[in-house]
Image (cartoon, rainbow, N blue to C red; front, side):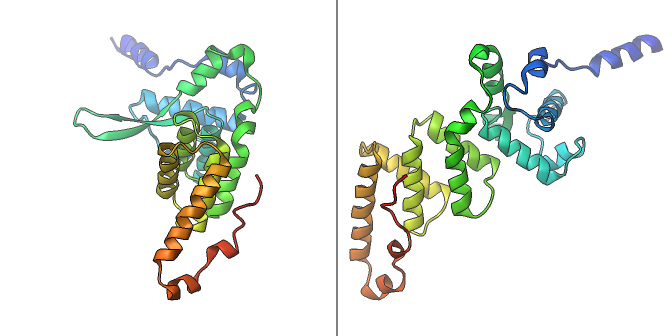
Length: 230
């Protein structure tokens, strides 16, 4: 009986690892450190924790909590991982890491996989956001940008234009940028030139409505070149 129980414990301690992932992770642009993080997240999932924190992952990885956060951000940028939400039995929304983009790359378009293909397309966009915010983006902020690109179908140039508009208005936050993009979408704005004109009209209206004393305090259009080419 004891030998049987020991055998069951050994079986229960196993998890399935994709052979294709182990053979092709470098082709996907993953480092060995990122691969280890993926396997640790998978282990946490098997143990009932689908959304481990960087601190929890770091306990079983060579790097620090900050290293884990950086690697997670990188994999979200590369569209290897995404953060999803689902409701539990009590109706509460919980976040979890989804491997669906990874499996699609490995099993759906494996013949067309090239290193850094998706990363190169949008890297400048993420860099621009980090420069304007003066810090690294959080995984949720990175996922928000990916949603704008993939689900909403926003062009990177329009997202950059919305970021610039937020800077001009002194409201540098993701909610405000999302409102701008949604408003432009409602108005049928599809080009950067259309966005610039809409932004100028809106700012002109705002300045007209403000008292002269407030307008003279801060004219942000003087130090941000909206007309600068992409």
